[in-house]
Length: 349
Image (tube, rainbow, N blue to C red; front, side, top):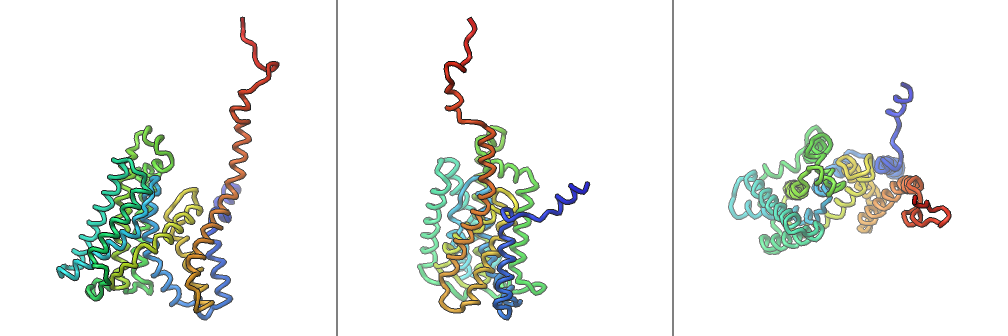
């Protein structure tokens, strides 16, 4: 009984929760170094709010990745969603909700086409979504006329991205709600189990009766939908559209997903992704506050190094298991099949 209780209370090790330890170390270092600027409510609110869009993009990447597919179009999908809603607001004067629904519908169509290319034409998802990202970039440039769109959103629309609830930016609640839904679907429903089975072993899942093509196709559609939501949230926060939006956010989203995949489980997961997003964000923010000017290079450097270190720490624990498994399996087949004449069994005559 005591053993069972102690195992339940055991603190997760570094290899399974390195992002949590990194986050704690960041708060310790910068809390002692620059407490007057780092440990403030303004800093917390700013980081929580600014990382919502990257968190949403990370969740968008996570869904098809769970089914074994990459979606490199998420950044372009964000920009496409934002330019569509901006165009409708500017040219038609439609209600913001209607414009947003039309933008999400356009993203779903784009995700459906990506799934069509991957599933029906058997194009690798990496190549298919990379191509789709360029198609979306071209559509975005055409719709926007390669110019910034400003001043088209109503004050009501902007409130959805700028107001606070109980002292916390409201966009944080959007991220938490979507994360809860995705976590529940992936971890507690047959659909989630089918998605994960497809990603773990596509052929075995198909032979077991899982409709793997539908899982991949649906994952890409869901990814496009969530990336579209990220675009709407981004628009409600900044209040304008620019062609520089979207694509630069793709690497931080992927970095968070892969970093998060080393947390808690041996696969990409919702809470690992979100913790990774904020661990990286608070680290970057602390460095920016500490050095003030001339730190434009810190964000990519910190994100890249944190990802490499986290994955390396997680891999250290996996290597002994692989060696042990290899020893248990015995020598390679070639060695076992090569026997000396003296030890070879004689056939019965």
